[in-house]
Amino acid sequence: MNWNVAQAKQHLSEVIREAAHEPQLIYNRNRPVAAVIAAEDLAGYRAWKEHQAKPQTLFDAFAELRLLAAGAPDPLPEPDRFAAMRPNAFSEMLKEENPPNATR
Image (cartoon, rainbow, N blue to C red; front, side):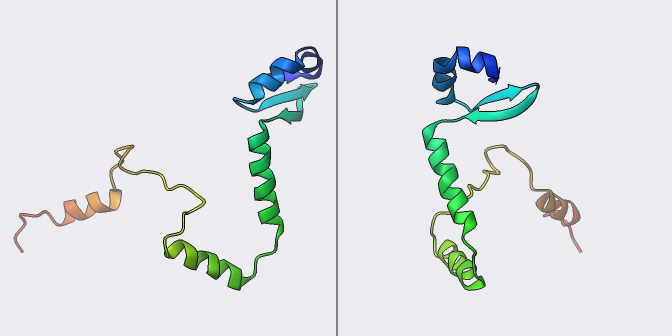
């Protein structure tokens, strides 16, 4: 939910309670000036920011890739293609060009 500064002051306990579910944006003259977020979200943001602040060498990048290739959990979730039942356009094109019962 969005709040202006005066509303946020008057309803601070509600702003904090709602922040546990989703970020609460506070506006001043229709411009965002602050956000109240859950403590877990802040901890995640700080960890991400700390990781981003460290300069990564090429060696470190390849070491991370080796870990991912060895089965370490990927930090970015892979979307489930089958859950959305999205067709694979490349596969469909190959089927059209080479039907299974086609004779050459």
